Length: 278
Length: 341
Image: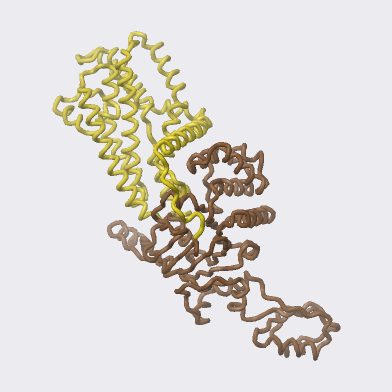
Protein backbone atom coordinates (compact mmCIF):
# COMPACT_ATOMS: atom_id res chain seq x y z
CA UNK A 1 0.00 0.00 0.00
CA UNK A 2 1.46 3.36 -0.96
CA UNK A 3 1.29 6.22 1.55
CA UNK A 4 -1.15 8.04 -0.73
CA UNK A 5 -3.67 5.24 -0.89
CA UNK A 6 -5.21 6.15 2.46
CA UNK A 7 -8.15 8.52 2.13
CA UNK A 8 -7.31 11.96 3.53
CA UNK A 9 -9.30 13.14 6.55
CA UNK A 10 -12.47 15.04 5.70
CA UNK A 11 -11.73 18.77 5.61
CA UNK A 12 -13.48 20.76 8.28
CA UNK A 13 -16.12 23.34 7.35
CA UNK A 14 -13.95 26.31 8.25
CA UNK A 15 -11.09 24.85 6.21
CA UNK A 16 -13.40 24.35 3.24
CA UNK A 17 -14.63 27.93 3.52
CA UNK A 18 -11.08 29.22 3.76
CA UNK A 19 -10.11 27.21 0.70
CA UNK A 20 -13.16 28.49 -1.23
CA UNK A 21 -12.27 32.08 -0.33
CA UNK A 22 -8.64 31.61 -1.39
CA UNK A 23 -9.73 30.11 -4.71
CA UNK A 24 -12.27 32.92 -5.28
CA UNK A 25 -9.73 35.63 -4.48
CA UNK A 26 -7.05 34.04 -6.67
CA UNK A 27 -9.35 33.39 -9.62
CA UNK A 28 -10.74 36.94 -9.50
CA UNK A 29 -7.32 38.59 -9.24
CA UNK A 30 -5.74 36.48 -12.01
CA UNK A 31 -8.71 36.80 -14.36
CA UNK A 32 -8.88 40.54 -13.63
CA UNK A 33 -5.22 40.76 -14.69
CA UNK A 34 -6.14 38.73 -17.77
CA UNK A 35 -9.00 41.06 -18.72
CA UNK A 36 -6.89 44.16 -18.15
CA UNK A 37 -4.53 42.77 -20.80
CA UNK A 38 -7.38 43.55 -23.22
CA UNK A 39 -7.96 47.14 -22.08
CA UNK A 40 -8.16 48.49 -25.64
CA UNK A 41 -10.59 45.77 -26.69
CA UNK A 42 -12.71 46.36 -23.57
CA UNK A 43 -13.72 49.82 -24.83
CA UNK A 44 -15.03 48.30 -28.04
CA UNK A 45 -16.80 45.51 -26.16
CA UNK A 46 -18.54 48.15 -24.03
CA UNK A 47 -19.51 50.14 -27.11
CA UNK A 48 -20.73 47.01 -28.90
CA UNK A 49 -23.42 46.77 -26.22
CA UNK A 50 -24.78 50.24 -26.95
CA UNK A 51 -27.90 49.13 -28.84
CA UNK A 52 -30.05 50.38 -25.92
CA UNK A 53 -28.56 53.86 -26.37
CA UNK A 54 -29.60 53.83 -30.02
CA UNK A 55 -33.11 52.66 -29.05
CA UNK A 56 -33.08 55.40 -26.45
CA UNK A 57 -32.79 57.98 -29.22
CA UNK A 58 -35.59 56.33 -31.19
CA UNK A 59 -38.02 56.02 -28.26
CA UNK A 60 -37.42 59.50 -26.77
CA UNK A 61 -38.05 60.94 -30.21
CA UNK A 62 -41.26 58.86 -30.53
CA UNK A 63 -42.36 59.86 -27.01
CA UNK A 64 -42.22 63.52 -27.91
CA UNK A 65 -44.78 63.00 -30.70
CA UNK A 66 -46.99 60.11 -29.48
CA UNK A 67 -48.98 59.40 -26.36
CA UNK A 68 -47.08 56.92 -24.17
CA UNK A 69 -47.25 56.24 -20.48
CA UNK A 70 -43.59 57.20 -20.19
CA UNK A 71 -42.18 60.68 -20.77
CA UNK A 72 -39.09 61.27 -22.98
CA UNK A 73 -36.96 61.60 -19.81
CA UNK A 74 -38.43 58.31 -18.50
CA UNK A 75 -37.50 56.60 -21.77
CA UNK A 76 -34.00 58.08 -21.59
CA UNK A 77 -33.52 56.76 -18.03
CA UNK A 78 -35.06 53.40 -18.93
CA UNK A 79 -32.69 52.72 -21.81
CA UNK A 80 -29.72 54.07 -19.92
CA UNK A 81 -30.35 51.54 -17.13
CA UNK A 82 -31.00 48.85 -19.77
CA UNK A 83 -27.57 49.71 -21.16
CA UNK A 84 -26.05 49.47 -17.68
CA UNK A 85 -27.82 46.17 -16.91
CA UNK A 86 -26.70 44.71 -20.25
CA UNK A 87 -23.13 45.74 -19.51
CA UNK A 88 -23.24 44.08 -16.11
CA UNK A 89 -24.89 40.89 -17.36
CA UNK A 90 -23.12 40.28 -20.66
CA UNK A 91 -22.14 36.60 -20.99
CA UNK A 92 -20.12 34.70 -23.61
CA UNK A 93 -19.50 31.46 -21.75
CA UNK A 94 -21.08 29.26 -24.44
CA UNK A 95 -18.41 30.23 -26.96
CA UNK A 96 -15.65 29.34 -24.49
CA UNK A 97 -17.19 26.07 -23.31
CA UNK A 98 -18.03 24.96 -26.85
CA UNK A 99 -14.41 25.53 -27.88
CA UNK A 100 -13.13 23.66 -24.83
CA UNK A 101 -15.39 20.66 -25.46
CA UNK A 102 -15.00 20.46 -29.22
CA UNK A 103 -11.23 21.03 -29.22
CA UNK A 104 -10.56 18.96 -26.10
CA UNK A 105 -9.15 21.82 -24.01
CA UNK A 106 -11.58 20.87 -21.28
CA UNK A 107 -9.22 18.02 -20.42
CA UNK A 108 -6.82 20.20 -18.41
CA UNK A 109 -9.67 21.68 -16.40
CA UNK A 110 -11.09 18.21 -15.70
CA UNK A 111 -7.77 17.12 -14.24
CA UNK A 112 -7.99 19.68 -11.46
CA UNK A 113 -10.07 19.33 -8.29
CA UNK A 114 -12.22 22.37 -9.12
CA UNK A 115 -15.32 22.38 -11.30
CA UNK A 116 -14.43 24.16 -14.59
CA UNK A 117 -17.68 26.14 -14.16
CA UNK A 118 -15.94 28.34 -11.58
CA UNK A 119 -13.13 29.31 -13.94
CA UNK A 120 -15.67 30.70 -16.39
CA UNK A 121 -17.77 32.32 -13.70
CA UNK A 122 -14.75 34.05 -12.16
CA UNK A 123 -13.57 35.15 -15.61
CA UNK A 124 -16.93 36.81 -16.26
CA UNK A 125 -17.10 38.40 -12.81
CA UNK A 126 -13.56 39.80 -13.15
CA UNK A 127 -14.39 41.19 -16.56
CA UNK A 128 -17.21 43.22 -14.95
CA UNK A 129 -14.64 44.91 -12.70
CA UNK A 130 -12.39 45.71 -15.65
CA UNK A 131 -15.36 47.10 -17.60
CA UNK A 132 -16.65 49.46 -14.88
CA UNK A 133 -14.40 52.48 -15.66
CA UNK A 134 -15.53 52.48 -19.29
CA UNK A 135 -19.19 52.20 -18.29
CA UNK A 136 -18.78 55.08 -15.82
CA UNK A 137 -17.31 57.30 -18.53
CA UNK A 138 -20.19 56.52 -20.91
CA UNK A 139 -22.83 57.17 -18.24
CA UNK A 140 -21.22 60.51 -17.29
CA UNK A 141 -21.16 61.41 -20.96
CA UNK A 142 -24.83 60.48 -21.24
CA UNK A 143 -25.91 62.73 -18.37
CA UNK A 144 -23.83 65.52 -19.89
CA UNK A 145 -25.86 65.15 -23.09
CA UNK A 146 -29.25 64.53 -21.38
CA UNK A 147 -29.12 66.59 -18.17
CA UNK A 148 -32.94 66.40 -17.89
CA UNK A 149 -32.67 62.61 -17.42
CA UNK A 150 -30.42 62.98 -14.37
CA UNK A 151 -31.97 61.66 -11.16
CA UNK A 152 -30.94 60.21 -7.85
CA UNK A 153 -32.29 56.75 -6.98
CA UNK A 154 -33.04 56.03 -3.33
CA UNK A 155 -30.32 53.98 -1.49
CA UNK A 156 -32.77 51.14 -0.83
CA UNK A 157 -33.70 50.94 -4.53
CA UNK A 158 -30.04 51.07 -5.47
CA UNK A 159 -29.36 48.14 -3.15
CA UNK A 160 -32.30 46.17 -4.55
CA UNK A 161 -31.06 46.93 -8.08
CA UNK A 162 -27.59 45.63 -7.23
CA UNK A 163 -29.09 42.41 -5.90
CA UNK A 164 -31.42 42.08 -8.90
CA UNK A 165 -28.68 42.77 -11.43
CA UNK A 166 -26.32 40.28 -9.72
CA UNK A 167 -29.01 37.61 -9.85
CA UNK A 168 -29.75 38.57 -13.47
CA UNK A 169 -26.09 37.98 -14.29
CA UNK A 170 -26.15 34.63 -12.48
CA UNK A 171 -29.31 33.60 -14.34
CA UNK A 172 -27.99 34.69 -17.74
CA UNK A 173 -24.72 32.90 -17.05
CA UNK A 174 -26.43 29.73 -15.87
CA UNK A 175 -28.83 29.67 -18.85
CA UNK A 176 -26.00 30.09 -21.35
CA UNK A 177 -23.78 27.60 -19.54
CA UNK A 178 -26.64 25.11 -19.60
CA UNK A 179 -27.01 25.57 -23.38
CA UNK A 180 -23.24 25.14 -23.62
CA UNK A 181 -23.61 21.65 -22.15
CA UNK A 182 -25.18 20.58 -25.45
CA UNK A 183 -21.70 20.89 -26.97
CA UNK A 184 -21.21 17.34 -25.68
CA UNK A 185 -23.91 16.17 -28.09
CA UNK A 186 -23.84 18.61 -31.01
CA UNK A 187 -20.91 20.35 -32.66
CA UNK A 188 -22.34 23.88 -32.50
CA UNK A 189 -24.21 24.53 -29.27
CA UNK A 190 -23.99 28.25 -30.05
CA UNK A 191 -26.91 27.73 -32.47
CA UNK A 192 -29.19 27.22 -29.43
CA UNK A 193 -27.99 30.47 -27.88
CA UNK A 194 -28.67 32.34 -31.14
CA UNK A 195 -32.23 31.02 -31.22
CA UNK A 196 -32.74 31.95 -27.56
CA UNK A 197 -31.31 35.43 -28.23
CA UNK A 198 -34.26 36.23 -30.51
CA UNK A 199 -36.67 35.83 -27.59
CA UNK A 200 -34.24 37.55 -25.25
CA UNK A 201 -34.09 40.58 -27.54
CA UNK A 202 -37.85 41.16 -27.48
CA UNK A 203 -39.07 39.67 -24.22
CA UNK A 204 -36.33 40.93 -21.91
CA UNK A 205 -37.36 44.55 -22.24
CA UNK A 206 -34.28 45.45 -24.23
CA UNK A 207 -36.18 46.61 -27.34
CA UNK A 208 -39.10 48.21 -25.45
CA UNK A 209 -40.25 48.50 -21.83
CA UNK A 210 -42.67 45.74 -20.86
CA UNK A 211 -45.15 48.48 -19.97
CA UNK A 212 -45.58 48.97 -23.72
CA UNK A 213 -46.68 45.32 -24.19
CA UNK A 214 -50.40 44.38 -24.09
CA UNK A 215 -51.16 43.63 -20.38
CA UNK A 216 -51.96 39.94 -20.94
CA UNK A 217 -48.76 39.38 -22.90
CA UNK A 218 -46.76 41.26 -20.26
CA UNK A 219 -48.30 39.08 -17.52
CA UNK A 220 -47.40 35.85 -19.32
CA UNK A 221 -43.91 37.09 -20.13
CA UNK A 222 -43.31 37.79 -16.43
CA UNK A 223 -43.42 34.02 -15.77
CA UNK A 224 -40.65 33.38 -18.30
CA UNK A 225 -36.97 33.98 -17.45
CA UNK A 226 -36.54 36.73 -20.06
CA UNK A 227 -37.73 39.88 -18.24
CA UNK A 228 -35.57 38.99 -15.25
CA UNK A 229 -32.46 39.34 -17.35
CA UNK A 230 -33.00 43.06 -18.06
CA UNK A 231 -36.45 44.50 -17.41
CA UNK A 232 -36.81 43.48 -13.78
CA UNK A 233 -33.58 45.07 -12.45
CA UNK A 234 -34.33 48.21 -14.47
CA UNK A 235 -37.92 48.38 -13.15
CA UNK A 236 -36.62 47.94 -9.59
CA UNK A 237 -34.25 50.89 -9.90
CA UNK A 238 -36.66 53.16 -11.77
CA UNK A 239 -39.54 52.22 -9.45
CA UNK A 240 -41.69 51.08 -12.40
CA UNK A 241 -44.78 49.15 -11.47
CA UNK A 242 -43.64 45.56 -10.87
CA UNK A 243 -44.19 43.06 -8.02
CA UNK A 244 -40.75 42.97 -6.45
CA UNK A 245 -41.11 40.00 -4.08
CA UNK A 246 -42.78 37.89 -6.78
CA UNK A 247 -40.08 38.97 -9.23
CA UNK A 248 -37.26 37.79 -6.97
CA UNK A 249 -39.21 34.58 -6.30
CA UNK A 250 -39.64 33.76 -10.00
CA UNK A 251 -36.00 34.61 -10.63
CA UNK A 252 -34.84 32.21 -7.91
CA UNK A 253 -37.10 29.49 -9.29
CA UNK A 254 -35.56 29.83 -12.75
CA UNK A 255 -32.09 29.80 -11.20
CA UNK A 256 -32.94 26.58 -9.40
CA UNK A 257 -34.44 24.99 -12.51
CA UNK A 258 -31.49 25.85 -14.73
CA UNK A 259 -29.07 24.89 -11.94
CA UNK A 260 -30.54 21.37 -11.72
CA UNK A 261 -30.68 20.97 -15.51
CA UNK A 262 -27.13 22.24 -15.79
CA UNK A 263 -25.70 19.69 -13.36
CA UNK A 264 -27.67 16.86 -14.95
CA UNK A 265 -26.44 17.71 -18.45
CA UNK A 266 -22.87 18.17 -17.18
CA UNK A 267 -22.79 14.68 -15.67
CA UNK A 268 -24.38 13.09 -18.74
CA UNK A 269 -22.22 15.12 -21.10
CA UNK A 270 -18.97 14.10 -19.42
CA UNK A 271 -19.79 10.47 -20.18
CA UNK A 272 -19.83 11.41 -23.85
CA UNK A 273 -16.71 13.57 -23.75
CA UNK A 274 -13.93 12.14 -25.86
CA UNK A 275 -11.26 14.78 -25.27
CA UNK A 276 -10.99 15.30 -29.01
CA UNK A 277 -7.71 16.68 -30.20
CA UNK A 278 -6.22 16.33 -26.74
CA UNK B 1 0.91 -3.43 -4.48
CA UNK B 2 0.45 -2.12 -8.01
CA UNK B 3 -0.28 1.59 -8.33
CA UNK B 4 -1.99 1.22 -11.70
CA UNK B 5 -4.18 -1.77 -12.43
CA UNK B 6 -5.82 -2.12 -15.81
CA UNK B 7 -7.98 -5.08 -16.66
CA UNK B 8 -9.63 -5.68 -20.02
CA UNK B 9 -9.97 -1.96 -20.68
CA UNK B 10 -11.96 -1.20 -23.83
CA UNK B 11 -13.13 1.99 -25.48
CA UNK B 12 -15.53 2.07 -28.40
CA UNK B 13 -16.24 5.37 -30.16
CA UNK B 14 -19.18 6.01 -32.44
CA UNK B 15 -17.90 7.80 -35.54
CA UNK B 16 -20.30 9.39 -38.04
CA UNK B 17 -19.70 7.87 -41.43
CA UNK B 18 -20.42 9.81 -44.64
CA UNK B 19 -20.15 8.72 -48.27
CA UNK B 20 -18.34 11.25 -50.46
CA UNK B 21 -20.20 13.44 -52.93
CA UNK B 22 -23.51 15.31 -52.92
CA UNK B 23 -25.61 12.16 -52.63
CA UNK B 24 -23.68 11.11 -49.58
CA UNK B 25 -24.02 14.59 -48.07
CA UNK B 26 -27.81 14.66 -48.55
CA UNK B 27 -28.14 11.15 -47.10
CA UNK B 28 -25.91 12.20 -44.19
CA UNK B 29 -28.20 15.19 -43.54
CA UNK B 30 -31.32 13.08 -43.18
CA UNK B 31 -29.87 9.94 -41.70
CA UNK B 32 -26.60 9.72 -39.87
CA UNK B 33 -24.78 6.42 -40.07
CA UNK B 34 -22.38 5.56 -37.33
CA UNK B 35 -19.53 3.14 -37.31
CA UNK B 36 -18.26 1.89 -34.00
CA UNK B 37 -14.50 2.09 -33.74
CA UNK B 38 -12.74 0.03 -31.08
CA UNK B 39 -9.90 2.37 -30.12
CA UNK B 40 -8.75 0.19 -27.23
CA UNK B 41 -9.53 -3.52 -27.02
CA UNK B 42 -9.22 -5.48 -23.79
CA UNK B 43 -5.96 -3.96 -22.58
CA UNK B 44 -4.56 -5.30 -19.29
CA UNK B 45 -1.41 -4.38 -17.37
CA UNK B 46 -0.14 -3.35 -13.97
CA UNK B 47 2.44 -0.77 -12.90
CA UNK B 48 4.38 -0.69 -9.66
CA UNK B 49 5.05 2.54 -7.75
CA UNK B 50 8.12 4.36 -9.10
CA UNK B 51 8.15 2.55 -12.44
CA UNK B 52 8.83 4.50 -15.64
CA UNK B 53 7.07 2.84 -18.53
CA UNK B 54 7.08 3.70 -22.21
CA UNK B 55 3.82 3.33 -24.04
CA UNK B 56 4.55 2.72 -27.70
CA UNK B 57 2.34 2.53 -30.71
CA UNK B 58 1.74 4.06 -34.10
CA UNK B 59 -0.63 7.03 -34.52
CA UNK B 60 -4.16 5.92 -33.74
CA UNK B 61 -2.99 2.74 -31.97
CA UNK B 62 -4.90 3.66 -28.81
CA UNK B 63 -2.15 5.11 -26.61
CA UNK B 64 -3.76 8.49 -25.93
CA UNK B 65 -7.20 6.94 -25.48
CA UNK B 66 -5.76 4.64 -22.81
CA UNK B 67 -4.08 7.58 -21.07
CA UNK B 68 -7.37 9.51 -21.18
CA UNK B 69 -9.16 6.61 -19.52
CA UNK B 70 -6.47 6.32 -16.85
CA UNK B 71 -6.68 10.03 -16.06
CA UNK B 72 -10.47 9.94 -15.83
CA UNK B 73 -11.07 12.19 -18.83
CA UNK B 74 -13.12 9.64 -20.70
CA UNK B 75 -15.37 6.85 -19.66
CA UNK B 76 -14.26 3.30 -20.57
CA UNK B 77 -16.80 1.28 -22.58
CA UNK B 78 -15.91 -1.80 -20.54
CA UNK B 79 -13.17 -3.20 -18.36
CA UNK B 80 -11.65 -1.74 -15.27
CA UNK B 81 -8.90 0.71 -14.39
CA UNK B 82 -7.64 1.69 -10.94
CA UNK B 83 -5.03 4.28 -10.18
CA UNK B 84 -3.79 4.17 -6.60
CA UNK B 85 -7.04 2.48 -5.66
CA UNK B 86 -9.28 5.06 -7.36
CA UNK B 87 -11.60 4.58 -10.30
CA UNK B 88 -10.35 7.40 -12.55
CA UNK B 89 -13.65 8.39 -14.16
CA UNK B 90 -15.17 9.24 -10.79
CA UNK B 91 -12.63 12.08 -10.65
CA UNK B 92 -12.60 12.11 -6.87
CA UNK B 93 -10.52 14.93 -5.38
CA UNK B 94 -7.97 12.59 -3.68
CA UNK B 95 -7.40 10.94 -7.08
CA UNK B 96 -7.00 14.25 -8.92
CA UNK B 97 -4.49 15.43 -6.32
CA UNK B 98 -2.25 12.45 -7.08
CA UNK B 99 -2.11 12.57 -10.84
CA UNK B 100 -1.09 14.85 -13.65
CA UNK B 101 -1.30 14.64 -17.41
CA UNK B 102 1.18 16.46 -19.58
CA UNK B 103 0.38 16.77 -23.25
CA UNK B 104 3.15 17.99 -25.49
CA UNK B 105 0.87 19.62 -28.00
CA UNK B 106 -1.61 21.16 -25.54
CA UNK B 107 -1.19 23.82 -22.94
CA UNK B 108 -2.90 24.68 -19.71
CA UNK B 109 -1.12 27.98 -18.99
CA UNK B 110 -3.00 31.19 -19.69
CA UNK B 111 -1.51 32.43 -22.95
CA UNK B 112 -1.51 36.18 -22.32
CA UNK B 113 -0.33 36.18 -18.70
CA UNK B 114 2.98 35.24 -17.09
CA UNK B 115 3.15 31.57 -16.08
CA UNK B 116 3.33 32.67 -12.42
CA UNK B 117 -0.32 33.77 -12.61
CA UNK B 118 -1.43 30.32 -13.79
CA UNK B 119 0.73 28.80 -11.07
CA UNK B 120 -1.11 30.94 -8.49
CA UNK B 121 -4.41 29.45 -9.65
CA UNK B 122 -3.01 25.92 -9.49
CA UNK B 123 -1.67 26.53 -5.97
CA UNK B 124 -5.08 27.80 -4.81
CA UNK B 125 -6.99 24.97 -6.49
CA UNK B 126 -4.76 22.30 -4.92
CA UNK B 127 -4.85 24.06 -1.54
CA UNK B 128 -1.11 24.83 -1.39
CA UNK B 129 -0.40 27.89 0.77
CA UNK B 130 1.66 30.79 -0.61
CA UNK B 131 4.94 29.99 1.14
CA UNK B 132 4.83 26.32 0.26
CA UNK B 133 3.85 27.14 -3.35
CA UNK B 134 6.79 29.52 -3.64
CA UNK B 135 9.15 26.88 -2.25
CA UNK B 136 7.90 24.32 -4.75
CA UNK B 137 8.07 26.79 -7.65
CA UNK B 138 11.67 27.64 -6.73
CA UNK B 139 12.61 23.98 -6.46
CA UNK B 140 10.99 22.91 -9.72
CA UNK B 141 12.23 26.04 -11.54
CA UNK B 142 15.76 25.17 -10.47
CA UNK B 143 15.40 21.57 -11.64
CA UNK B 144 14.05 22.84 -14.96
CA UNK B 145 16.49 25.72 -15.38
CA UNK B 146 13.71 28.32 -15.40
CA UNK B 147 13.74 31.65 -13.58
CA UNK B 148 12.82 35.01 -15.10
CA UNK B 149 10.82 33.24 -17.83
CA UNK B 150 8.05 32.65 -15.31
CA UNK B 151 7.42 36.40 -15.15
CA UNK B 152 7.06 36.82 -18.90
CA UNK B 153 3.76 36.33 -20.73
CA UNK B 154 3.54 32.71 -21.83
CA UNK B 155 3.11 33.76 -25.46
CA UNK B 156 6.61 35.33 -25.38
CA UNK B 157 8.33 32.08 -24.35
CA UNK B 158 10.10 29.72 -26.71
CA UNK B 159 8.56 26.29 -27.24
CA UNK B 160 11.13 24.67 -24.94
CA UNK B 161 10.61 27.26 -22.18
CA UNK B 162 6.86 26.90 -22.50
CA UNK B 163 7.07 23.12 -22.17
CA UNK B 164 9.19 23.51 -19.04
CA UNK B 165 6.67 25.98 -17.61
CA UNK B 166 3.88 23.51 -18.46
CA UNK B 167 5.77 20.79 -16.59
CA UNK B 168 6.13 23.09 -13.60
CA UNK B 169 2.40 23.85 -13.61
CA UNK B 170 1.52 20.16 -13.93
CA UNK B 171 3.79 19.15 -11.07
CA UNK B 172 3.21 21.93 -8.56
CA UNK B 173 0.89 19.68 -6.54
CA UNK B 174 3.57 16.93 -6.53
CA UNK B 175 1.60 14.19 -8.24
CA UNK B 176 2.76 10.64 -7.63
CA UNK B 177 1.48 9.35 -10.97
CA UNK B 178 2.40 11.20 -14.15
CA UNK B 179 0.91 10.56 -17.54
CA UNK B 180 2.96 12.11 -20.31
CA UNK B 181 1.69 12.24 -23.87
CA UNK B 182 4.49 13.24 -26.24
CA UNK B 183 6.19 15.50 -23.68
CA UNK B 184 9.08 16.40 -26.00
CA UNK B 185 7.07 16.93 -29.18
CA UNK B 186 8.55 19.66 -31.36
CA UNK B 187 11.41 20.48 -28.98
CA UNK B 188 15.01 20.82 -30.14
CA UNK B 189 17.57 18.23 -29.06
CA UNK B 190 18.82 20.26 -26.06
CA UNK B 191 15.32 20.94 -24.78
CA UNK B 192 14.38 17.26 -25.24
CA UNK B 193 17.40 16.25 -23.20
CA UNK B 194 16.54 18.82 -20.49
CA UNK B 195 12.98 17.49 -20.22
CA UNK B 196 14.24 13.90 -20.02
CA UNK B 197 16.75 14.79 -17.34
CA UNK B 198 14.06 16.57 -15.37
CA UNK B 199 11.65 13.64 -15.58
CA UNK B 200 14.38 11.27 -14.40
CA UNK B 201 15.16 13.60 -11.45
CA UNK B 202 11.49 13.92 -10.58
CA UNK B 203 11.08 10.15 -10.65
CA UNK B 204 14.16 9.72 -8.42
CA UNK B 205 13.21 12.44 -5.96
CA UNK B 206 9.52 11.59 -5.44
CA UNK B 207 9.43 7.92 -6.47
CA UNK B 208 6.74 8.98 -8.94
CA UNK B 209 5.28 6.51 -11.41
CA UNK B 210 5.61 7.69 -15.01
CA UNK B 211 3.88 6.38 -18.08
CA UNK B 212 4.83 8.14 -21.25
CA UNK B 213 4.15 8.00 -24.95
CA UNK B 214 6.65 9.39 -27.39
CA UNK B 215 7.59 9.17 -31.01
CA UNK B 216 11.17 9.95 -30.04
CA UNK B 217 12.76 6.64 -29.19
CA UNK B 218 15.50 8.54 -27.35
CA UNK B 219 12.86 9.44 -24.73
CA UNK B 220 11.99 5.79 -24.27
CA UNK B 221 15.54 4.44 -24.22
CA UNK B 222 16.68 7.17 -21.83
CA UNK B 223 13.83 6.82 -19.36
CA UNK B 224 12.06 3.48 -19.60
CA UNK B 225 13.20 0.01 -18.65
CA UNK B 226 9.82 -1.37 -19.46
CA UNK B 227 7.66 -0.78 -22.51
CA UNK B 228 4.10 -1.52 -23.47
CA UNK B 229 3.45 -1.94 -27.16
CA UNK B 230 -0.03 -1.28 -28.44
CA UNK B 231 -1.15 -2.08 -31.95
CA UNK B 232 -4.63 -1.40 -33.30
CA UNK B 233 -5.99 -1.06 -29.79
CA UNK B 234 -4.44 -4.28 -28.47
CA UNK B 235 -1.50 -4.70 -26.18
CA UNK B 236 0.99 -6.90 -28.02
CA UNK B 237 4.05 -6.60 -25.82
CA UNK B 238 4.68 -5.88 -22.16
CA UNK B 239 8.23 -6.26 -21.00
CA UNK B 240 11.76 -4.91 -21.06
CA UNK B 241 13.21 -2.90 -23.94
CA UNK B 242 15.89 -5.58 -24.44
CA UNK B 243 13.23 -8.24 -24.53
CA UNK B 244 11.39 -6.26 -27.18
CA UNK B 245 14.46 -6.33 -29.40
CA UNK B 246 14.94 -10.04 -28.84
CA UNK B 247 11.34 -10.75 -29.69
CA UNK B 248 10.80 -8.43 -32.60
CA UNK B 249 14.23 -7.91 -34.20
CA UNK B 250 14.77 -11.00 -36.37
CA UNK B 251 18.41 -10.26 -36.96
CA UNK B 252 21.43 -8.52 -35.50
CA UNK B 253 23.95 -6.32 -37.24
CA UNK B 254 27.50 -7.64 -37.54
CA UNK B 255 29.99 -4.91 -38.36
CA UNK B 256 33.36 -5.99 -39.81
CA UNK B 257 36.53 -4.05 -40.46
CA UNK B 258 38.67 -6.18 -42.79
CA UNK B 259 42.41 -6.25 -43.37
CA UNK B 260 41.99 -6.37 -47.15
CA UNK B 261 39.33 -5.79 -49.79
CA UNK B 262 37.24 -8.83 -50.82
CA UNK B 263 34.92 -8.90 -53.82
CA UNK B 264 31.20 -8.79 -53.15
CA UNK B 265 30.27 -12.33 -54.37
CA UNK B 266 32.87 -13.74 -52.00
CA UNK B 267 31.45 -11.81 -49.06
CA UNK B 268 27.86 -12.70 -49.91
CA UNK B 269 28.39 -16.39 -49.10
CA UNK B 270 28.43 -15.51 -45.38
CA UNK B 271 25.04 -13.86 -45.26
CA UNK B 272 22.90 -10.82 -46.17
CA UNK B 273 25.02 -7.71 -46.66
CA UNK B 274 23.47 -4.47 -45.56
CA UNK B 275 26.30 -2.15 -46.56
CA UNK B 276 29.84 -2.28 -48.02
CA UNK B 277 32.22 0.67 -47.85
CA UNK B 278 35.77 -0.29 -48.84
CA UNK B 279 37.06 -2.64 -46.14
CA UNK B 280 34.04 -2.04 -43.93
CA UNK B 281 31.14 -4.50 -44.25
CA UNK B 282 27.85 -4.69 -42.38
CA UNK B 283 25.88 -7.97 -42.31
CA UNK B 284 22.37 -8.63 -41.06
CA UNK B 285 22.44 -12.06 -39.44
CA UNK B 286 19.52 -14.01 -38.04
CA UNK B 287 19.84 -14.52 -34.33
CA UNK B 288 19.93 -18.31 -34.41
CA UNK B 289 22.72 -18.30 -37.00
CA UNK B 290 24.78 -15.62 -35.25
CA UNK B 291 27.40 -17.78 -33.47
CA UNK B 292 28.00 -19.96 -36.49
CA UNK B 293 28.29 -16.97 -38.86
CA UNK B 294 30.65 -15.05 -36.60
CA UNK B 295 32.89 -18.12 -36.20
CA UNK B 296 33.08 -18.57 -39.97
CA UNK B 297 33.81 -14.89 -40.55
CA UNK B 298 36.65 -14.91 -38.00
CA UNK B 299 38.10 -18.16 -39.37
CA UNK B 300 37.86 -17.47 -43.07
CA UNK B 301 38.36 -13.70 -43.45
CA UNK B 302 41.13 -11.29 -42.45
CA UNK B 303 39.17 -9.61 -39.69
CA UNK B 304 40.67 -6.55 -37.98
CA UNK B 305 37.63 -5.68 -35.87
CA UNK B 306 34.16 -7.17 -35.34
CA UNK B 307 31.17 -5.91 -33.42
CA UNK B 308 27.63 -7.21 -33.01
CA UNK B 309 24.82 -4.73 -32.39
CA UNK B 310 21.07 -4.64 -32.26
CA UNK B 311 19.42 -2.70 -35.04
CA UNK B 312 18.19 0.77 -33.96
CA UNK B 313 15.03 0.46 -31.89
CA UNK B 314 13.17 2.81 -34.26
CA UNK B 315 13.67 0.26 -37.05
CA UNK B 316 12.38 -2.57 -34.89
CA UNK B 317 9.28 -0.71 -33.79
CA UNK B 318 8.71 0.45 -37.36
CA UNK B 319 8.79 -3.15 -38.54
CA UNK B 320 6.37 -4.27 -35.84
CA UNK B 321 3.88 -1.60 -36.80
CA UNK B 322 4.06 -2.32 -40.48
CA UNK B 323 0.74 -3.58 -41.71
CA UNK B 324 0.32 -7.28 -41.12
CA UNK B 325 3.49 -7.73 -39.12
CA UNK B 326 1.68 -8.71 -35.99
CA UNK B 327 -0.49 -11.29 -37.70
CA UNK B 328 2.43 -12.63 -39.72
CA UNK B 329 4.43 -13.30 -36.61
CA UNK B 330 1.48 -15.02 -35.05
CA UNK B 331 1.64 -12.80 -31.98
CA UNK B 332 -1.41 -13.01 -29.83
CA UNK B 333 -2.47 -9.83 -28.06
CA UNK B 334 -1.62 -9.79 -24.38
CA UNK B 335 -4.91 -10.19 -22.59
CA UNK B 336 -3.75 -11.19 -19.16
CA UNK B 337 -1.36 -9.21 -17.09
CA UNK B 338 2.33 -9.93 -17.45
CA UNK B 339 4.74 -9.63 -14.65
CA UNK B 340 7.09 -6.70 -14.52
CA UNK B 341 10.53 -7.46 -15.92
